[in-house]
Image: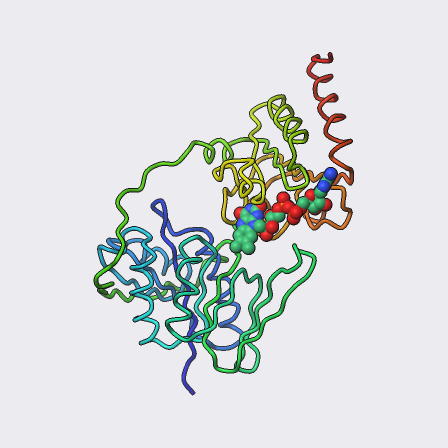
Length: 331
Ligand SMILES: Cc1cc2nc3c(=O)[nH]c(=O)nc-3n(C[C@H](O)[C@H](O)[C@H](O)COP(=O)(O)OP(=O)(O)OC[C@H]3O[C@@H](n4cnc5c(N)ncnc54)[C@H](O)[C@@H]3O)c2cc1C
């Protein structure tokens, strides 16, 4: 019987393989152990031989290192061009991507080109009787959707990994690196420049206290209180969930979550945030999470170390007054 393959995309950013890509190894090893499928990484880039060796040593998985100067940046068109040819020539059962903006662009396009299924935001994968079963959150974290592919149908999956899930225990032996020159061909787009963005990222990721506003605090009055509270807490930084950034209450650099900043402060204060998995992915490593929400069933309360079930309209003025009193600032 032909040995079935699982491929994992290793994303390289800021001089390192991303922790999210490394975390895929654990998931792939678990599936390999159960099914006998062979798992291997795909690393695309230029002059990354050393990184490919490190990846093979660190994870124990084989690495196919596909090299070309046009793969130097995370250029989605070049990645798509190379992967669509390579994966066509190397049939697979599952190809994993860790969730990222690059993967959002290429995973569905790749599935279309290869006539594979595409399932995104997956939190758990199993292989059952030739089918791949994926679970993902639904109904704002209050439910779970279960998807199953037709038997034998290849699938491209984007997985939500937690940074807590590292590459797992050190492997007994290193994987083998297979280096291959590839050609993305003539590209229609070119990355002209990559320049540093605003400083929000630094402030948010370094602050010992993060005050985070969710849709439940998405009004002028609540945001006034949250800004005052942030100013009173030493070295605190203000951040927000995605809806508030989408609605332009906050710049996108202040968004916390899967598609925003990843923070792990000493204290994370979540005001009016429901706790969708995409938000949790950006803050669940925080040392102490305090959530204030009027809904006792909000998923964030399960992730929190301290939960306050209260309406922000009542809570925020009282909390600000308390902080002012402690600072001797009482009116
Ligand atoms: C591909 C993808 C990527 C995503 N990336 C991100 C991301 O990076 N970051 C992110 O945050 N989201 C992200 N999301 C969106 C995510 O799924 C949720 O929709 C979002 O996190 C919800 O934001 P929220 O909790 O502020 O709003 P809601 O889910 O609407 O929750 C609002 C909460 O406020 C509470 N509330 C309302 N009024 C009050 C009140 N008066 N007092 C107290 N509590 C109150 C409610 O009970 C509720 O729990 C992404 C989604 C997708 C599909």
